Amino acid sequence: MSLLPPPTLIDDASGLRRLVADLASCAAVGVDTESNSLHAYRERVCLIQFSTPSADYIVDPIAVPDLTWLTPFFASPDQEKIFHASEGDLLGLGRDFSFVFANIFDTMSAARTLGWPQVGLAAVLNRQFDVTLSKTHQRADWGRRPLKTDMLDYARLDTRYLLPLRERLHAALVEGGHWAEAQEDFERVAHVRPKPPGPSPDPMAFWRVKGARALPPGQTAILQAVFDYREGQAERINQPPFKVMGEPVLMELALRAPASLDDLSATPGMTPGQVHRHGRGLLSAIQRGLHAPVPPAPIIEVPPDDVLARYDRLQQWRKTRANARGVESDVILPRTTLRDLSQRPPRTLDDLAGIADFGPRRRELYGEEILVVVSR
Image (cartoon, rainbow, N blue to C red; front, side):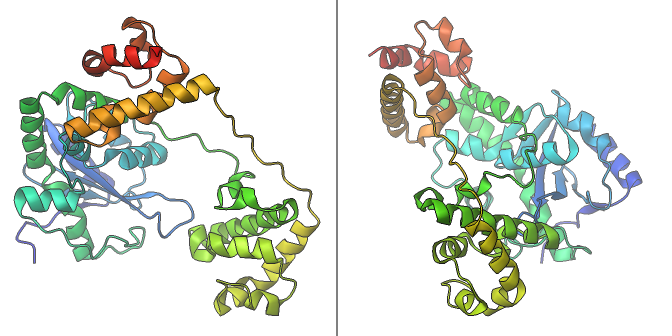
C-alpha cells in the first residue's frame, strides 16, 4: 500500500481551473500521459499526470475534453515540463489537444546522455530512490471508466519522482560538461510535431507488412484486399488491427488464397473464432483480390553512391565516438543529422548551422571532425 497521499483526480472544469492555478506557481512540474494504443483503433490520450513539489494530479481528458486552460502552461518558456521519454507523450498531446511545447526536460534523454546503462523509468527510480514500480497496469486499457484507485496510484508514480530525479540528472550533466548538449536534445524534442493525418484507410499501408514486397503480383493484390478488410473490421469494433488478425495470417491468406471455410480453417494461424467471425468476409475479400489489378509497389529511392559512402563513413565515425564515451550512437548525433550531412556535405563550420539537429554545442564538439569525414 502506498504511504503517499492520494492523487487529486481532475474530472471537471472547476478542478481543471484549480490545477492550472497551482501549476502557475511552479517553476518545474513532472508530466506524463497514459494512452490506449493497445485497446483502440485510434489511440488517444486517456490520462495526463502532473506532479508539483507538493501534490500529484491526474487529469481525465475523457471527462474533461476541453483542456485549453493548459495551453499556456505547456507553451511557457518559463516553466519546465519534466517528462521521461517525452516524445510519445508530446506527440499524443499535440495530436489530441493541439498543444505546443517549450522548456522540456527529458529524464530518459538526460540519462542516455550520461551513459547510464539502464534508462527505463522503473530501473532509474529503483537505482536512484530505491523505489519499485509495479508492472500490474503496464498494458491496462486506460480508456475504460470508471478508473480504479490502484490504477490512479500506479499512474501517479510515473511523475511523483521526476522532480528530484531531474535535480540529480541536472547536477550530473553539469558536472560532466554535458548540460548544453542535453539542452539541444530537449529543444529538439519540444519541436516534434505529429504528422498531419493522411488518407484513411491508407491505400499503401499493406506494403509495410513483413514480406509484402516478396510476394508474386497476384498474391500482392490479395494481401491488399485482406489487409483492407482487417482495417475496416478493426475500425468498426474500435480495436487495434493486430487484435483482429496478425500480419503473419494475412500473409498466409495471400499466399494460399483459400476458397472455402474449410480452407480458411486449414490456414496456419487462423483460429476457429476468427473463421467464425470473419470467414465469409475474408473469402469475399480474397475473391476481390483475385480479380483486382496488381497494385504498383512504392518506389524506394536509393541515394547516389557518394551519398551512401559518406553516410557509411559518418556512421563509423559516430560509432567510434560513442564507444569512446560509453553512450549509444544516437546520443552523439541523431540519424536525421547523419542523413542531412551525407546529402548536403558542409565545407565550413558555418555550413553546419544549416544541418538538421546540429546545435551549437555539437558543432563545437564535433564540427572539425565532421568536416574531415565528409570531405574524404
